[in-house]
Image (tube, rainbow, N blue to C red; front, top):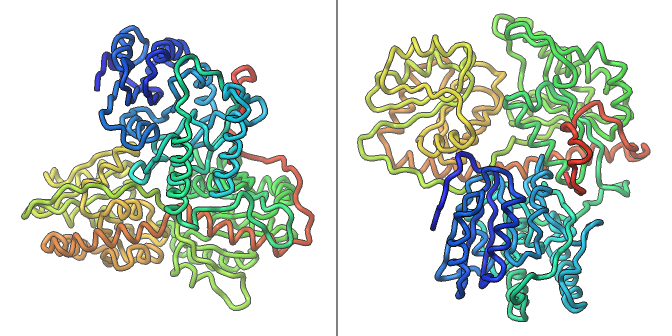
Length: 636
């Protein structure tokens, strides 16, 4: 591997697999030099038996980007294996995969990158309007290409069936969306492999003209065709049936499976919170399944913030909201949020032609206003009975929402992004137990009891990730103990690495407003053993994989940690259970179950005419200037 120069930040990684492309590779690199942004890198993964690698070495120092040459003596997996090798070496957030024969025009790369927002994949397609496949050459090759495309789309369903060119070799992919350990390519159709095995459902397409080969011979032979058929058979056999969805799923009483959904919540991006993250993943997941989802939140309707108290101004917009609600097939309301979810239940509930699915996150618990909180919870429970269906994230809250003659209640846990099982560092005998806390540093998070449980204890180490108004006080509480580390805020990669390094993830909150514990589930997915306080919803999450302790009890927390530190075999067994538990709680399953509830609820009003095109109060990212926008077909 050869690196002639380094860039401080990699803006995009371009992966180019090569096999005997000595007549093309220099010209390709020069054309990429005028097309790529500053800070790009080009990774050439070479299986050649000619002078291709020598030419790459000669040209690389003259390029305005970093060139990485990976020469493979044993070309495992063919061209697809070379692409995977390049993706593993990529250092940018997005990678562009393209051939070296100049049939994939370098000037299209900026158009692919311009279409990445909100997607995991952007495909350069020959078959969408504006595309051109004349570079294939003979009518025979055109016929073979189209037949292979039809065969693949019929075999795998969604998302492949929604792609106009699922066999394209020219695409951009978000590296964080890939699980390369699951990929097992055969031959050269790597896009199909990635889309199916990594479930790349959020994608856009950019039309392009497939150019004629500049020089050399095509690698498309009868032998490659047979490898392609073997690849299809292997990929189909390895794909779980649950992951193979038809392009459209029928809904009883309707001719169109897609829904117009209004999702109403207090917090959504760019607000950073657990609720915001859940709403974002749910929104994108439903859009990827073909539904139109608009989001109404405090981003659109401002709220008043007085210290820890937040008040929505939705009531002042109730007439506008009432008209807006009528344009949707179903409303998914998230609460409770005083002056928002209760007003929405009154507004939407009064319009009985518009069904409402209410997602109940937790009971309201405001510090210093406990009596008012209890009164509000009773009133809000009465209002939630106006909904057509109720969803909770745990059985504990489902029991609280169930009532005779009331709406049906469904328990749907939130999800987690499953990474490959981490290679956890071995814990030497006698070394401290590594405990991780992730969250805001506020009184209700229970740090007043966690820090004394660990500070100064020789067999324990505590890392606290997060920040907040109480941090300075908690640092004083730790008293400079050498086994307590305040790491502050970290990015997603650093957080993932922290989960991988620690033995235990702890949630020690003291308020019932802590209803689920997403960070606990993320830790479990990395093999951390969960230790949580006895709160409704939270205590349901670990199952048999962790320890539940009483609220506000430093001694119980310390005893739980010490018991794990003293029994390495139990710690390892619980770690394996935690990972298995997390594997059953992925985002795909969560979104799928939400889709079922929303569809069934809307179907009960099937006699109502379908909502037409809506004029949303919400949502989209700012549009690019007209001149900068590529011709993009986006599937959300």
